[in-house]
Structures are given as C-alpha cells and as structure tokens.
Image 1 (tube, one colour):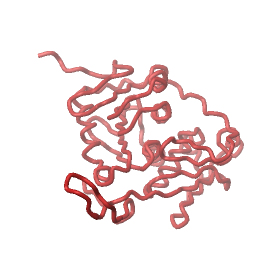
Image 2 (cartoon, rainbow, N blue to C red):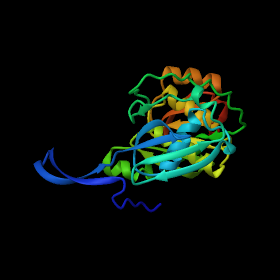
Image 3 (cartoon, one colour):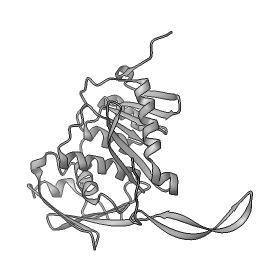
Length: 271
C-alpha cells in the first residue's frame, strides 16, 4: 500500500533529541490535531477532536454509534465545510434527537467523552447480541494483526495515532488512523454506513486497549470478531459475553489470547 501525507496529517518541527549519541537538534514529524464541529438539523451537537482526514466518515460514524443514524434513509443531507471544520447533517427525524443527543459535548481523543457542558441525554440502550456464523482460524488472526501493523505508517513515523481496520477473510478492506482510538472505529462505521457495506461477516482489527466503549462501538457496527494488539477491560469482556462478540487481545507475532466467545476461533490441528 502506497502511503502519502502531503502535510495533511503531520507537521515538521525542530526538536532536541537526547540518546546514547548525546543531544542534537533534529527535525521530527508531529501529528496534526483539529476539531470537527458537528451540526444535526442546524443544532450544534458535538466537537470531535481528531486527525484532519475522512471527516465525513467520522461524523456519520459518531452519530451511528450514538443511535441517531440507524439506516441509510435516516440521513437526508450531508455538507462538509473543510475551511471552518464544520459538518452539517440533516436527518429524517427531528423528534428523536432530543432524547438521543447530548446538547453539546467535546469529544477528546484520549477518553472518548469529556463533557464541557451538562449532558441531558439518555445513554443509548445496549444493541442486541450479534448473531453471526463467522469463524476464523488463528493463522488468519495473526496475519491480520501483522497487516495492521504493516499499514500503520503514520504511527511508525510519529508514534501519535491509533489504527483500526475492517477485514473480510484475510483481506483488509478499510483502514483508518486517527489521534483518537474511538475515532478510528467511528470512521469505519461511517464509511460502511455511507457505502452500505455489510458488517456481519467482517472482522475489526484494532491497535489499542479494548474498553467498554470500544466493545460497544464494535457491537453497534454488528461486527462479530474484535482483534486487538492490546488488552481488554473487565467491563468490556462482560459486555462481550452478553453481546456475543469474540474478543482477542495481545495479538502480536505468533501469540494471541482469546477472552470471549472462542467458538468462532478455529485452532490448528495437532501434528
């Protein structure tokens, strides 16, 4: 996969580097950070702190994860003002928004939710369990984790982003990177929503820790298998059991750990 940036995602900066060779001035590449303000039916809904790419996917995926957009017909209009970092979305239903959306929030890349004003919205209900007959062998799991690592060029250059991918079989069909780990999944969700890509037979590969929020985003995408290079939390695993999501963690090199719903994982036959 050819990688290009053209200054969109990174910015050069002179820094002082200290290592075994001593101290010296070098030029380093720093990830860019921006804010995307989302308006739903002319009302400011959220300010998403993110990397400046695939903003439409991010906004739509965020609204999907919040339960505002459920089917393609819910989205009437989408306009993106790249100059000012604003995105305007019109939905088919006005009445449901007051029950589903926070009046105004600031979504930070580290925690996913850090309120700058009081939330008056109800927490979205849990999605139904994911019903899927998908199975995957351990060899494919390891190959997908390695493929995610190989594609993570921006992380390799800066160390400042998270990565996620959507795969079918051994093929990665969507790859996303962002300063916010939650944003990577929202971008995938948004792209699938806009391009009407089915997810029940797909796999998510993720670079970060699997928290309850990450698990819920996976469940709301209806993806049955979640692979991570890092660890899950206990609440994430409780939700995984209830929502029938297969969770694998510490998938690195030739090792992996299966934390929930191992019935979807095919083990190699003994020699």
